[in-house]
Image (tube, rainbow, N blue to C red; front, side, top):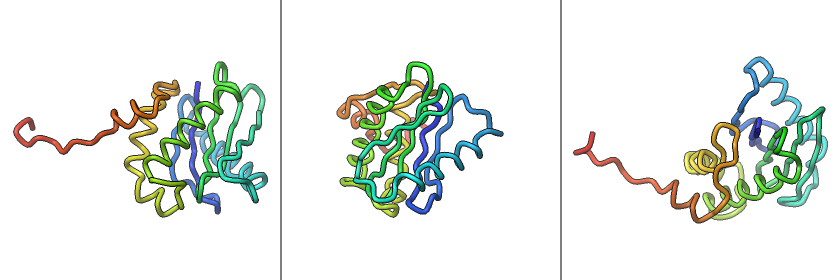
Length: 149
């Protein structure tokens, strides 16, 4: 299961988070742990350089993409190899949504589109789509038709 996807800025402020199967009382612990992990290891990291950590039976893959840090937490079948594939899909979708590696401001400007991408990639903790073209097609927004409402 993909337990968490978290995006923060370089100062450690959370910009986006998705939790699956983590009780609400444990989420603060995970936020704090992941941001501290990034603060300790991502200084001076190259863009999209992947880092791996594990805690008990849980795997964590994290990276820097432009002005944001991305963390993915998985367990069971989502080991470090599977999480690198998920990370590749997420980073490429974010770059597509933003048109380039995002700064914090660009990430927040494209927040809605990025959330739609994540919804198509991961559904209830399970990797759903990995094909860029399919994700792009699925997130295509159409204005509502007032006659159907």
